[in-house]
Image (cartoon, rainbow over all chains, first blue to last red; front, side, top):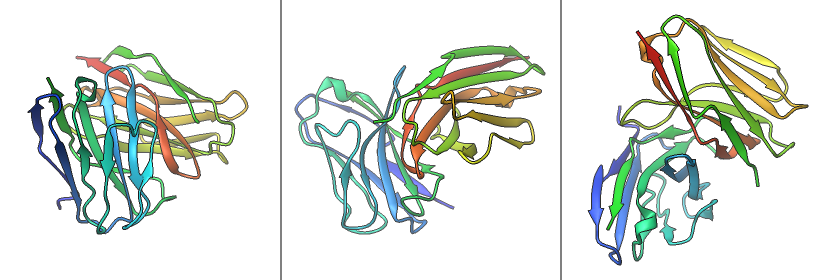
Length: 113
Length: 111
């Protein structure tokens, strides 16, 4: 049972570089989310997608973009990374928009130098 | 938007004792309140949730209470065990949509 797969697990990136974090789910969930986790701040929503073909902005969207070309994949792109984007990024999914439980991946640790 | 505050940020308990984590929320329209547990190196996992039409919910050693008037909810873990050591997050939302999370509580159970 795979659930949600994130890649890479960990990455060190120079400031100004472009980076895409990958997220794939095999549960056929409609809703997908990207959160960042920072010490003392908990989990903050970056972008979300209610269903394939649609995306929306969360609490902290600046500097990030997403796409949802199909049900399974929801990549997060940093067009020009900055040190403040150093964080642990979690992808999550849910069967639908209003169906409670989120299923999280194991995270991608990103360090921007 | 919703603002969720969580206390304490760290909690150390003796094995077998109880642990209590408290959260407050700002949006009176919030009606869904889940709790997630995050073990080291893993993503958060739902352990229990409560909706605004009930005041308390139990699942074995875990219970959650909700006071909508005061806009706060709490997680209670009884008879703590070493495997309860983790980071716990509370969250709140309207209609299960776009959860707002607290900052997290690191729980350490001492043997």
